[in-house]
Length: 300
Figure 1 (cartoon, helix red, strand yellow):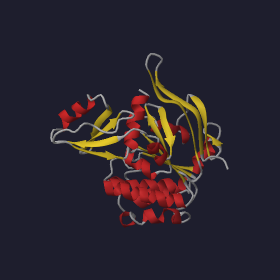
Figure 2 (spheres, rainbow, N blue to C red):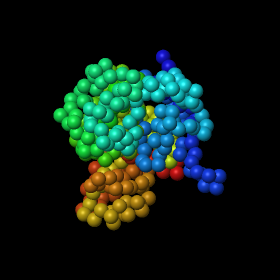
Figure 3 (cartoon, one colour):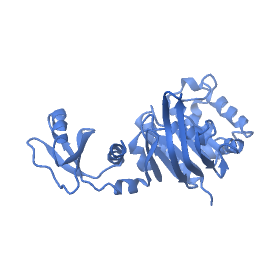
Figure 4 (cartoon, rainbow, N blue to C red):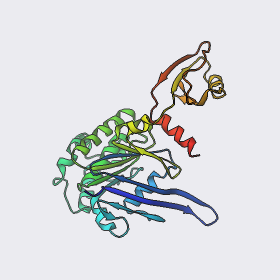
């Protein structure tokens, strides 16, 4: 069975000969059919450029890629009929109603809302009470659901979602990932990009990216399981001086703010820190963000 998405040595540069920015640097990986695959990284990591190449909206400078076995350059027409794409910015027609936007996108793909209603039903029923409302007047979470319905209305085999949860509230984020779980059960391959490290654990497999480079690709458990150093969560009354103190200790590999604690990575072989007055310390399991920070510094 061919891969749903196959990327081989993709590179993309922007700018002029005098000043060039490398958005993607020799990126290669495969996505299996039916997989929920996450591309995790901050702004400027290259996530949007990669998605635009895979959805045939942008040409790579080097490398090749296929989607559902079709080449992104030679077979762009077939790919455009087979994929769903939800860009980072809300790109639907603000002056059209919910119902009109959905009907319009169905018409573009020579189908109807009724023909594929079962695919979007669980999502659409949440916005159906507002079907006569103009898209520009919807809340962030409702816009997100409408955009997803429009991306799905032609029953795509591969769905690309570029930072779909950026700028929406925590409840909407949780609901959105639940919806993706439902779509995965219907056999749709989903590629989702996000700057939120906590969303990585909701994917089958993730690629960690920074400044156009691929840092690591594995399952979420595989990534955290490969982190061998001990991590302590440290908290005190004066957090900023405490952070500086931790960073200067010979036994500490790295220390950085993490919520109400400082995550402190001990050097290899070190098991604990010396006691500090008025400071709480506890060992914690490394998470994706700890792994990402370590990989980012390793590749700097």
